[in-house]
Structures are given as structure tokens and as C-alpha cells.
Length: 442
Image (cartoon, rainbow, N blue to C red; front, side, top):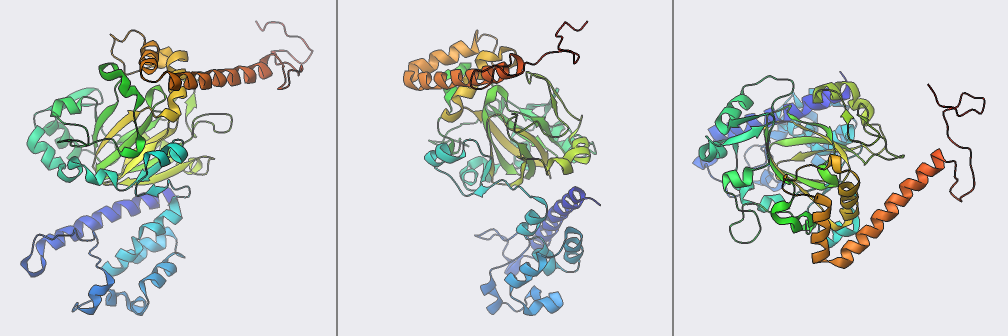
């Protein structure tokens, strides 16, 4: 059994175990109390101080481990491989809790782990994190939708409302029935761009906002376009195994993805360059307008996952309920739901990536997407809004765009015209046949 399979089985076992323990707690409430002020640990673990007053400590069921401090047990388990951990956790409930310690599995399988932080300020994000994936654990937990949304809660309020699930529009009740009773290798994914308007949601931190952009991401410069901005936010609902194959976010934007229910596995690669080719199994045309990859997530995981995780630049993580993940502009990413999930995602333009967005809109008009047809020229319209708002910012960004273009032109000249970096003549590139001839190839 390969590591990816063992890891997946371990994750699935974790969620089955949590569900069983929650059912047991619901059936046997302590002292008749069914409501608690602080949510219990999902595996029933309590702070060590409870051992002084409790009549029973389940740790006594661990045999020889019972006399050891918890920290020593965890250190011992660090020497076990995945198969041994899975076997150990099957012996008793207490060892199950120890063997499910997240850091044990991270050290085994997540070799290039995406950093997890509680929060960032806007200045910290701008200074150090605009080009790095990361997870934040605190901001989403403040949202009303995090506290209030679940599949049942959404069904109660939006049962007959239609949402887009890939190529079809289904009432939510129909999609949830499908989600709960499907065995598809690649399940349909609910991915709706108009959910805010359909559901009558208020977005923003002030007043009665039901969710808002995490503060650290600062101003979204596409917001200057108002009603003319391209599609930018989506409600995402899907069962286990659903997700999205490798792609980059549209129009060179960055993105954040907030998990309200469930958990998602992410694997990301830096923007394509001479140093960082596309992910294994992903083939891109010279202008990056066409991407070819395996048809399904499972095909890619079976055929390329092991190789990908050893590839330069690869990072990965599990983004859990109440967490939000940042995807920098230009980064390739694949996402798969490890269990039924609800999430909200939004694309945005931070100041640090304004030059990349301007260059994309100007130089790749055929790949620009998400704008309404009545927006005559996305690039021209965006430039005009930026000029009205902050001429200095626009000028600085355009200077960077020109330097980017000159850099690409210089590399092309070095390759095709044979000009070296210092302007001297180098060996030229041509379609010759080894005799010095550059005649056209018929």
C-alpha cells in the first residue's frame, strides 16, 4: 500500500472515529446535561487537570503506556510508520486519540507543509506573504455564516433555490440528495458565482454582514470596477472526492478559500517559470492558454501524486473547518474534499500583484475571463479606474509591467537572435541540420 493510500485511509478513519465519538457523547450526556459552554474535544480528550477529580481515566487502558507522561508517548509514536500507527489506534480509544495527533501525520506525509498562522495584519501580509500560500485559523471563526451554516441549515432556508453544479442548475435539495447518495469517481461540484445575490446575503464587516474578506488581505483593487468587476466570489459545496483539478486563478488574481464545514486537501506549485515547470502530469501550451491534464483528480493522484510531492516548489496542507487558505497569483493548485464540505472563495487583486494583473489583461486578452460582455475593454477600464483613484500607484505598476516585458524580450533575444546578456553575439538558434544551414524546413 503506497503512502498516499495509507494517508487517505488514515484521514477517513479519523472522521469516522470523530463521528462515532460524537454519537456516543450525544447518547450518554454527563449528568443529564446536553448543552456545554465550551465545545468538547472531538475525541473526548479533556485537560490533564481533570485526572485529579475524575473517577476513571481512560489512559489506564493503554497498558504499559499508562505510566508514561503524554509527551513521552507522543515522542515514542514519532518512531512508528503509518501502518503501525493505524494498527495501534485500533487497539483502544485512548491510543486512538494519541495516534490521531495531527503532527505525527504531518511529519509522515506532508513534507512541504503550508504554514498555519492564527492571523496576519495587512502590513505583515503586504511585506512578507503576498507570494506565499498560508492558512489562517482565526478570521473565519468570527463570521456568522461559520456559526450558522450547515447542510441542514441551508436546506431549511434555501431548499428550492437553484445553484450551479458544473453544467446544471439544481435546487439545493436535489444537489444535497445527490451529494449524500453518490459513488461517482468525480462527483459534481456545486460552484455558484451568484450565491450572494440569490441568498440575499450581506457581505462586509460593518452592520449585519454575514461574512467578510479577512482583514489581512487589504484592499481588493478590482473593487474599483464596481459593477463592472469580473466574477470574484463563489459558494462551493461538494461531497467527499469532489474538487478541482490543477488550474490557476483567472486574470492573474490571488484568492482565499474559507472552509465552513468539512476539510480539503490542497497541493500547490509556484507560477510556471524556468525554475518551476508546471506540476507533473500537467502540460501547458507556450502561451499558457491551453492546459492538458488527467481527466479526474483520482487519475492524477494515482498517476502523479508521489512524483509531485518530491518536485521542487511543491507545498501541501489540509485546510480544516474554520480555516482559510491563501493562494498567491499564478500558483497552480489542485483541491479535493476529504469529506462533505461547504466553503466560500474569493479572488482579489492585492497591490503587490497589480503589475501581473495589468500585464495579463493587456497582453492576454483572449484569456481574460469573468467580465460582462458590456465591459468593452477590461484592461482600458481598469487602467482608467486606477488613474482616477491613485495615479502614482498606476504609474509605478506600469513601470514594473514594462520591466517585466523587457525581461521576457531579452530572454527571447538571447535564445533566438544569439545576443548574449552583455549585448555580444552568441551562437544563434536555428532549424539547421548540422551543416550550418538555416534553410527553411519543408
